[in-house]
Image (cartoon, rainbow, N blue to C red; front, side, top):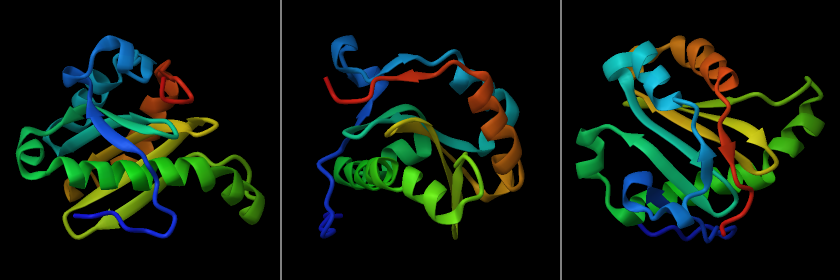
Length: 155
């Protein structure tokens, strides 16, 4: 899949287990993957953190890891990182409903939640459809309870 959006982002995806420590963007996960796996079990398909440049994948269900090409993951990174860079503050100002906490996107075969942590950084979690309402309740609560720290720019 080629990402050819007019607002194309140079973002890239990386797996934490394949990335040297000096190139990782997450300084602390505070056990978020384990907590989400405990809460969601087999419904959990991905846990990642992002900044303006990188989507760092900390958990990716083995079935999906085999099925996605690196270019597909880079396209996902481009979309999530761009949303984080451009959309969060705008949404708060536009809607005037208070702090922007998370957004859920629904697809035929799964759900994706993106929750900002600070300017341009955040956590993305995907599940199968069985997770249902847990995605809107358990996941944001778990993210808030963990001290996840993401550097703001690619270093």
